[in-house]
Length: 395
Image (cartoon, rainbow, N blue to C red; front, side, top):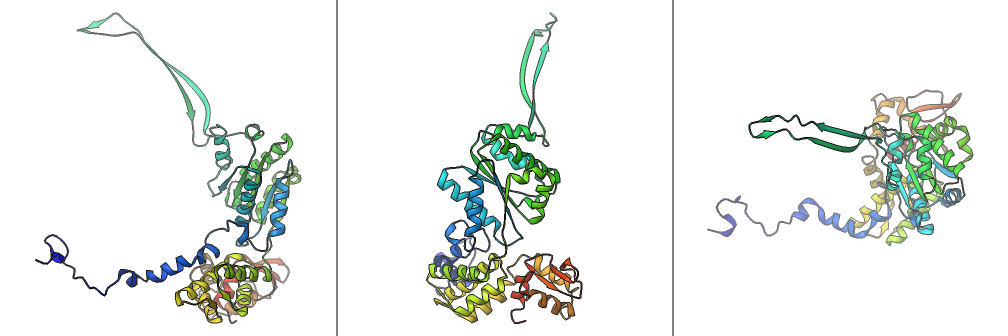
């Protein structure tokens, strides 16, 4: 019997010309991985090194200066997709490298409490945020001098020391400040806008005020939206004097173009001028979309065995990118046109998307718009502008 058809094994005929790698298209994937393009253009994760953080030099300096100032903390503020998390990550790394200041990052979610936000730095100091009190329990059994058969009841005394825990244990703001006042470190509170309990931001603002008053070397860097910044300062007005707010505006077209071109040079790719301009224009100030389009263009060139990025690559990238964006964007677009791609609302949205700035005039109200002032609107989700420019690249 042929060794290829042994008893008890599936009878699969070997075909010498068959390659599983070719079947799944993994040869192309291997070439893309080897090219390192995904290490330079990173639409799916924050930028981690300052060399790849383009166009934010002034903002980085402002945040670092604030955190290096005794008694001062910082808030990085901006709309979604403008690179807040990337900037905070680079700032934290710079401070750690320059001063050996340890840092920890807390990425927030709707279930977070004041205790969960501070859990890691407090735990590092030996504080259990869930422990609320200690208890001592005594157990006694008396000797009654009664024997039953051969069994006697022995006199017994036990002492147990335990701790009482509960999931919603509370740590006072002043108590937390006392623990942190002598600790040198940085806490990055990322995506603070995800926190749904307004009392959490109130407590964080109060903590910042306490740390400032105590002259603590422990610093807090908060990352969130403009609404989060407003909530933080209005809930504790005196905290605004301790917090430097650095607002990230959409990146300028030149900075986005520099991002694309410099990344290409690092990889040995040459982006045509019209491709660089097209990516910068379509991205509408959002680095995420510039990374996404540049990456898709570069991957196509790698697969084709080319080093030049041509306009045809950008057309391909725009078509492919519509399927790679946050699913909430196409869903919001369909809602805005009431599910009808032939609706006049489509032209209304396209016209708003190609406006030079985030604000535009309109005589028509649309679910995708929020009013700024009479007759002037902006997109409720600022990422809708680049999404529409990519979906409808030729108007």
